[in-house]
Amino acid sequence: MNFIPLATSAGPRRASPPAPLKPVLLDAEELRLFLRSLDTESRAAEQAGDYARADRLATRAAGLRP
Image (cartoon, rainbow, N blue to C red; front, top):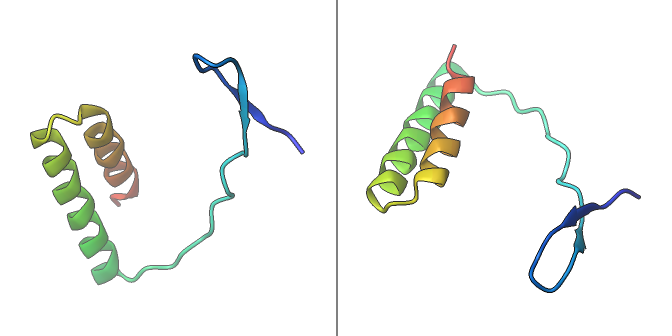
């Protein structure tokens, strides 16, 4: 089992690797609603000053757009 070392003030720690991605099939309407929710959450995060989260959500939405 491989672990990803994380640097912290208490010294290096080991964390589990992220779970593998699961393929999901969405129809056009579900994809549209999902992209709309990602855009809404991105705008809310940006208004709250959480620019890193806003960028992650916007990047995810851009990658899913046809």
